[in-house]
Image (cartoon, rainbow, N blue to C red):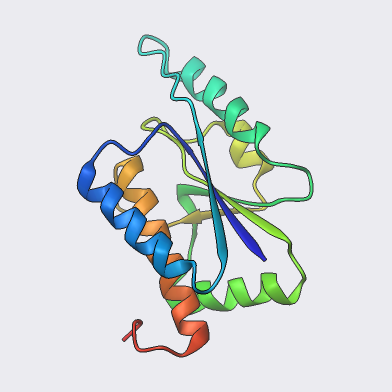
Length: 154
């Protein structure tokens, strides 16, 4: 199985970028992870239009065969062990590619949420979209650590 993380815009905060790089390196010992960064095209005066345009760009990177996980605060909440089990199920089902989509500052469009095979919430709390990227990578690494039985999770 391969993971694909799709984000709008580059990560600007240096400390978050360092964390993303760190967890990407750690995760690479377990699974191939690719990043697709789309151009940030925020139209400040029209948030709805911006979300729609961004959603179209995000979905361009999702083939029909991709299993798509959209991150949204209203999504399903899992603890780390449950997330690890879910990843194991995807592997057992022979999924070739799982695409995780994190939206921009305004969130994800209705079209992205409708396309998603799973809408997942990292927390009921609100995080910046850049912080959500880092938290997603940490949770992916934690899930693979759980599956491998390493000490990281404890």
